[in-house]
Length: 383
Image: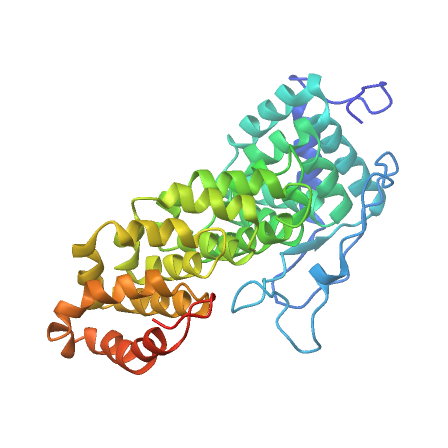
């Protein structure tokens, strides 16, 4: 479509009124559905858009249980986009063809920008009406939207449509949400996700954040896995302390990928005590302790600072990390090291009898001390 063969001549800078007039004429015959029921929409079968390059949308992304919310990403269903029924498919076809040619052709991208500038000079109500119709034409048909989004200039054109009108932002947000995974994996389309996040309100931002999080884990199983692992590992230090980013780090540690887990643990080196004494950070440290690829780095840091090791036992969150470390060492039969860590705490048992330290002290007395003293080494010798 980007190659202009002259079959669909576009208005030049002196003839934008032709397209604006077409939208105005369409406005007189438009039936805007303002309720929440899905209308019988026209499907714009634009013949010069090839559908062969588009894969069918994965069933797991669109299936829902009868009577369930139409969105599995938030507590509320996506509201259906406003819609209009044109007086004739032919008129819609011509308008859409002109828009698509302008938006996807390298030589006409500037014309599209000028077209929007001219729209901005209209009275507010008329401008909003035109922008709404543009959004409806571009988003009603999924293949039309994806054709634009995955085209170098089409994605740029969609980008500059954001933040021009609340109703247009709503239509684009809906289209981005429905096609999120496909947009996320395309080199041109993925930028639209950032544009959508910047354009919508806090509630819709949260929907897109959650989609990003969920599909990142899906991508981690595909060809983008190594790039994502590298990115998360590189930023693990600040992500682990962030109230949202910490969940990303935790889930990547759960995947137990040797390279990624080792890289994350290396990046967190020097921060394990600080993380252990924060609510979300303590979960990160516990997952590192339970991983064969990260445990050594955590225990090495704990082993090198007796003062902080003792202080963790009485900390609101740190005491759970201490218990986790003791249990893991017992489970992995690391008896000499376990005895060393317990001996570091022994002079402070009296202080641990009150407050948060009680849980750790009870664990040591009931599960650890007897195990250390009674079980033989792997060589068969008793201690």
